[in-house]
Length: 246
Ligand code: HPA
Ligand code: MG
Image 1: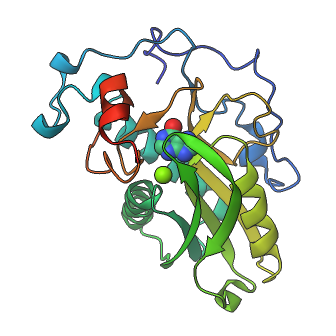
Image 2 (image 1 turned 45 degrees about the horizontal axis):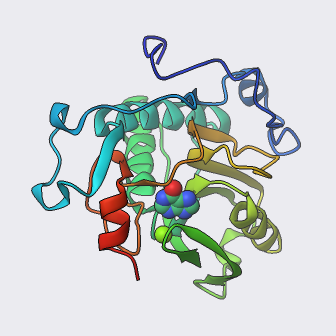
């Protein structure tokens, strides 16, 4: 992503610490870049420049991260994951619903890269769900809905896959929950990390993009269940917010 000078900046001015206690290997420690950092002033691309579903015309302000850029970034995350886990078997824990596209594309890319390197790697995906958002606001009551028994994680390399990390509450709760099943190793992949006030102090191990504090939709991220079927990550318009408000 060296060429995206218009939307990216260096990370040094952001306050995140890396989860270094989880990343003991050299490859992870040597990766200084925390992901593609999108500046606060990034206005996105005009909708006219991209192919967007007709049914959302007027409900979106701009294309914030085009689908092709997301896919390319995911290939890089998959490469980093393989570098760290060394082609060992992987238990993936997908955080629904927002994480389903990211998880699916990430796992496909891990498999494809492992296969083309002539390595054996099995992946298994389990699903877990949190519910905590109403309209574009986070609510206090957050609970895990998913398999009660995650004993299959014991002794395994576990990758938690989340579409978006803002306060880090979900990530922390899940890490605590997963640790009780005694995995061999736990890593977290977050497609988006949002710069919010009192945001996550610890970054996921694999970060796609660090974005400003704006409500985004698409690529399985929703606003009251709408926009998951949009391939690009976009910013919702005021009209869109009003139209799909509950
Ligand atoms: N979009 C959709 N879901 C979310 C967001 C967002 O920006 N932040 C937290 N959950
Ligand atoms: Mg949601």
